[in-house]
Length: 215
Image (tube, rainbow, N blue to C red; front, side):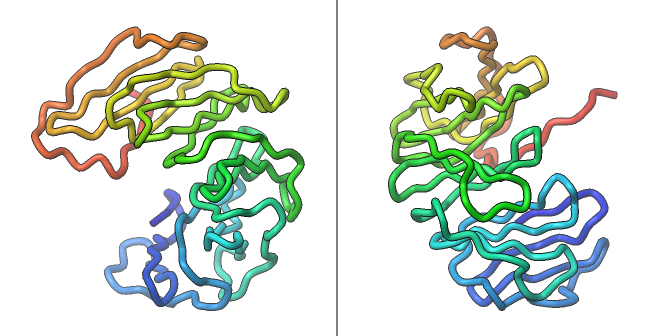
């Protein structure tokens, strides 16, 4: 599932991707061409392109289109997670070989491939384009230096990590899955949390969260 504030809601299901206009409760159309087994959806920072991760490829659709503009297969090995860096470049985590592929805007071949670890379940991109990979089953979060393609930090023994987010100061926030979930904050370059707080609700659904400006 993915959406932006001004665009439709896109929900993947076994037969395609349903598109819901703002405020609608029924889909206005279903995208089937170029859609197989969807593992992730993402809308590009330009707001004009929908990226559909099929595992064996990534199909790119115009935001209002029914057919893919292009299909990315180079650098793909069971792609499972999509993200975009601060320059609008596509970042793909491959669950097959554990690699991270980074693509230029409008590109179909990776600019760079990082040899990472298998078992990644979520991605986050820092303000300087560092890449964070959550490995939930191993209880690790790995940070990769995008410029040097190297592992620059490894945060270990975080129980059931799920949802990463990075603020403009490069502080990493991780929510775990538990009966009472905990949010941990890790300052830049630190492997120890500077603070943590418990989400005061039992059986909290941690499949998604968002951060916004305080008011």
